[in-house]
Length: 226
Image 1 (tube, rainbow, N blue to C red):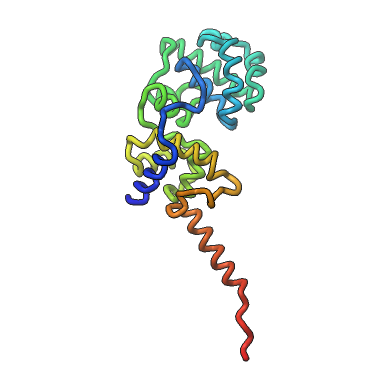
Image 2: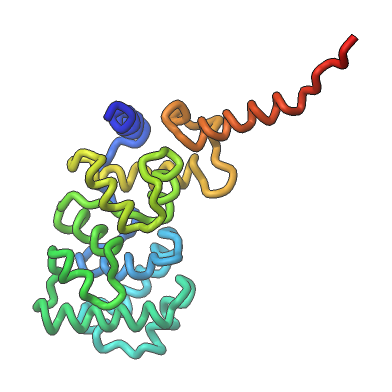
């Protein structure tokens, strides 16, 4: 598909893939925790919280034994803190009890952990295990839809559609590139189309331009007959 190839070429030029995760972590389990915290929260906020969190809870065992009230206070600023604390403690317990403290690479085993959906599982699979994975967060969902690479709104359907549309070696880079583009240019409100080099390939821009042109034509009143 020429459009897909052109989009990927532009993305590679704009945002060369460096493999660096937006969420900061040292141990694999820390990425799992950080990704759970990132639900309905910015990566910047999570990165402000996790240094203190991992200092106070330096091991999976410490998290598994954490008091939910104390942990909730620790992660309060990430939002939905009570539920996230419950999920983090539950995931730590299951990793210790069922997986010898190691993160599984299998997506079914990952999504069986409390609070871990396909998005979180795919972040872990992509960055910890190097398994090509599509991560559909709010930016990937929005920008992919605007580009016209999907018409779905359900993240799981978008994930599977992109897996069919994109070459596998671009799955993980696409996540980082589209998230970066969504943050810098194709923002949720008032996308910066004038600064975007993807506009010739973007359904949203093409449709918006066509609508604006038609609207302008309608505003021009014909001259009265002589």
